[in-house]
Amino acid sequence: MTAPPADLLERLQQHALLRDLPHEQVAWVAAHGRPHSLAADEVLYRKGTHIDALYLVLSGHLVIHIDRGAGLRKAMEWRGGGVTGLMPYSRLAATLGDVVAQEPTELVSVHRDHFPEMIQRCHELTAVFVHVMLDRARAFTSGDLHDEKLMSLGKLAAGLAHELNNPASAIVRSAKGFTEYLTGAERASRALGAAGLSPQQLAAVDAVRTICLGAPVTSVRSPLERADREDAIVAFLEDHGVDVMSAAPLAETAVTLETLDELAATLDGPALEAALAWVAADCATRRIAVDIERAASRIHDLVAAVKGFTRMDHATVPEAVEIGRGLTDTLAVLQSKARAKSVAVNVTVEPDLPRVQGYGGELNQVWLNLIDNALDAVATDGRVEIAASHNGAAVEVRVVDDGPGIPDDIRGRIFDPFFTTKQVGEGTGLGLDIVRRLVQRHDGTIEVDSRPGRTEFRVRLPVTP
Image 1 (cartoon, helix red, strand yellow):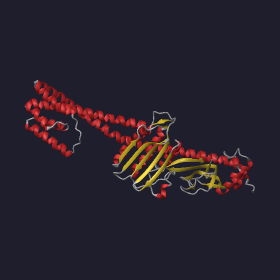
Image 2 (image 1 turned 180 degrees about the horizontal axis):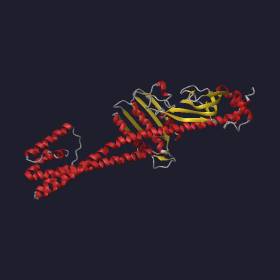
Image 3 (image 1 turned 45 degrees about the vertical axis):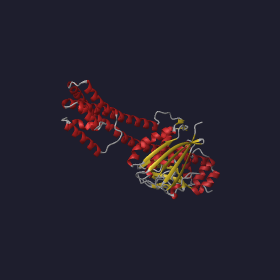
Image 4 (image 1 turned 120 degrees about the horizontal axis):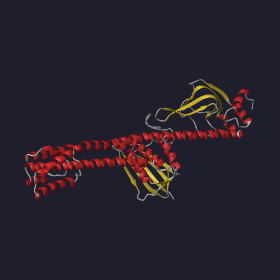
């Protein structure tokens, strides 16, 4: 080995990672290393470029920017005393983003051809670089999980906003009409009291009211059917000289023309008008109250589903997790997306399904990614089937879609980090990589079978003892 340049050896001995290593190992780096200088904004590696060397940063500042679907973001940086590039035993083949000098930077590179000798002769030096590689992998993994969670949070927020908008709008509409109908009900009550009806006539009015309140409409009429029914009631009211304002609310009930004829046989004139106005106002008021209750219950159910999905009230320690509940909560979050594509989604959970030990929030992240991908894969009016069953010592969850399938030439890469078949900005390529990591963290396995018209992902998780 030739003697290294004295100034390079001296600078390497001051490097933060090398200063405590044996002198002969630092000298080995100096003898096999090659100095480099980068100007500000000069690129060391472009995204996707093959990496063939390790780089020790003597001075300056390097930054790598990675696009995970939401634009370029700084993923990692190195200053004097840092090391980047290829590491011993690393499987990294190409850069995940552009590595750019932020200021004039000095480097020393060691080509991968020298790695076998370094591993054999410089044990402490090799150990340092392996630890750097592990720390870098943890940092990238943490960043990937963080970005994927942010994207999931965005989907959750968008879906929740869409789902909450419908019942919230219904409450606003109903509340506005409630005061009007309540005022009408009070006015109709006074008019009915002033009519001085006999007990027989009051009984006839109560019979109509009972039908109105006790027989809910079980079918949804088309706009034409509603218009025809309202026209028929208007004609009845006009024939009996009664204000037609009661026609619209009566048309929304189960009251028939035969029932109205029976009432008209008992009452006529102002008494009939007062009775119908009171029945219509009372039924409309109660119907609005029921609508408000249903809408509020829907909001409550949505909030409960999101709370269950995020597991925000659970400690961050392993616990017994109900898979069925997690699938249901996840589907509630994605329901608006399924409806937007007219996709039929069916969830089947085996009765008395045993629990699994793990982190509920992380498992919900798995279900979210798999179901979301299935919804993306199917065409409009497609179908997604989700099933959870007990299989031996494990719980098996299957997500099946009738989309075009995964081509054979990319099937082996779908779990690779940053690999995606979606358009730019639509996918990060992290979803299935995150799924694989989270499943492995729970001592589970994930498999995929795919052909045109059927793609199935299977996740197996060990049952809680």
